[in-house]
Image (cartoon, rainbow, N blue to C red; front, side, top):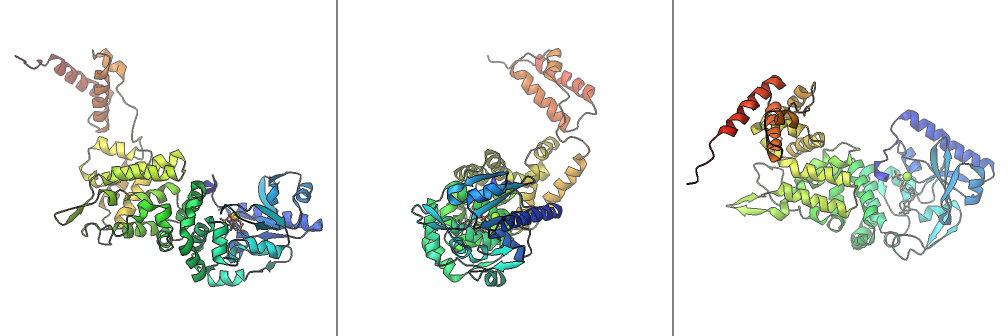
Amino acid sequence: MQYFENAMTESQNHSTTKLLACRVIVTLQSAGFTAYWAGGCVRDKLLGRVPRDYDVATDARPDDVMALFPRSAAVGKAFGVVVVRLEDTPFEVATFREDHDYRDGRHPDSVAFCDAETDAARRDFTVNALFYDPATSRVLDYVEGQADIEGKVIRCVGDASERFREDHLRMLRAVRFASTLDFSITQETADAIRHDAQLIQKISPERIRDELVRTFCEAAKAGDALLLLDELGLLKLVLPEVSAMKGQEQPPEYHPEGDVFTHTVIMLNLLPSPCDPILALAVLLHDVGKPPTAFLDEQRWRFNAHASVGGDMAERILRRLRLPSATVDAVSACVRGHMRFLDVPRMKRSTLRRLVGRPTFDTELELHRLDCEGSHRDLGHHAFLVGLCKEFASEPVLPDPWVTGRDLMEMGVDEGPEIGKWKKTAYDAQLEEQFPDKEALLDWLRGRILREATRQPPDHH
Ligand code: ATP
Ligand code: MG
């Protein structure tokens, strides 16, 4: 899926890709066509960032492109897009085009091939509408995009309202680019989003998901991205349950920082960039169960069962946004379990081992750390668990059980539920490290089983 494809990080990979991207241009230009790098890669290059991918724009028609590159496939021939492969690296080569009549607010009804300047005009933001010719090192800027990169602003190409009515997803793209590039959105562009925000509801959940996940995972400050979504009126439409956290008060002794929304913003701002989507979503949603469970008990806010209510809500929200099941399950497990970390000092060793052995434990521990950092800043439980993990590092946290059903049957335990009960007793004792080895554990079990079997049944007379 798109958002799991990580940006190219290794510089080695990147310089190879860049060379191949030059070769695409040279091949087209040598055949007499105009060809440039276009869009995001030019923006990233000017910003000194590593581009995710190099897109090419050209006046060659799809058939010309396919004739020049043997390993190519038309992915959207009607839109003039061909994917060419050089040494297994794919490049999108798109014929300069203008888009016509977005009747559905999502896709153009038809396209017409044109020149570079007209192609720039169909692009979403000025910073995304630049071309670059690697053969001459020349930037082609028809929309004053370079000035906006310098000024660090996201501005629509042309009339902002019109552009958002053509394709409503651009409203979320504006937030993503502002948040990931650490730019601001110009007044006109922001006003247009505020005015037409409700149109976002016409966009498919999958496309909303991709933008939101990338925004929270790639933003320089994911908390500021959340504030921006809210200021523009988009948050209550795409994540109403998160919007409901605004103004939800909580006890100041645990949360001196303020309401539930403020707490979440602070935590999101502490995330690394890029961030694993499971952690980002777990932070975003960890307290989503607070507003619906809130009640005032003698002047004090209580949120009984907010973690399990929140876990169910997280599951519903993420399914609605079509996140993959593994992500839904992991995030909702983190949300459901986040209050257990308060009980850590009172946990038995077997319970601690089961906690540390959970498949989502690393994410849960980080969520807990951020939860503390974003409120009272007491990291005692976190430090204790980090120490425990070190202690457990040389052995499996959840070792194979010593005692099997067969051992128990040999000791005379009847088949059925009794076996399960004794297995659990034996495994608990093993995890508690009460016995040095299996033999010692079996001796103890034999005694207990015998005692239980000879115990007088209760007198019913
Ligand atoms: P990144 O790949 O880092 O997310 P990008 O700018 O390359 O950023 P893409 O979604 O890959 O973004 O799109 C490539 C280019 O196509 C953009 O830079 C922009 O010029 C144009 N573009 C993409 N989506 C739209 C859209 N919805 N409306 C108008 N132009 C768009
Ligand atoms: Mg791109």
